[in-house]
Length: 162
Image 1 (cartoon, one colour):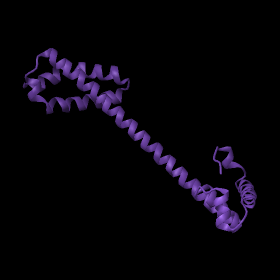
Image 2 (tube, one colour):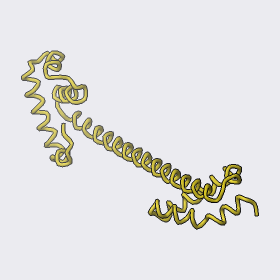
Image 3 (spheres, helix red, strand yellow):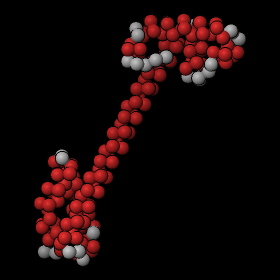
Image 4 (cartoon, rainbow, N blue to C red):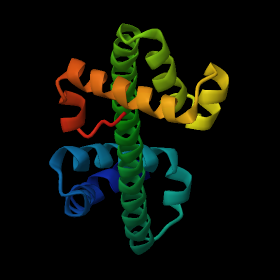
């Protein structure tokens, strides 16, 4: 039996026990153990020169670092899923609102779009449409009221605001 096999046989219980004790999840601990065995094989020259106490320290460090890497990877994957889900929700909501805007009278739809999509002020919209700012605000309120009626207040109940 060579040095790598001896290390794997001698420390397999330690690897499994320590991985489980810090991961608190059997499947994750098994994955950590497998990755640890790969590290043992890849670092066989280093390990062949270490004493048993140094090997134990090296294994504890490797197992801890593998757990950290796996948790980071899971966190990044979860964030990516949340972003994708949030992005899909926003696209769906935007598409639904744009359809509703098309159902409004043209001037009201343009005012809502200019205000909420382009971020224009009432004054800027008024200048562009050759209306007074108070007329723009009045038409905006009228348009928002129509949108609320069309969606049955469902967007407002879900904390989506126009």
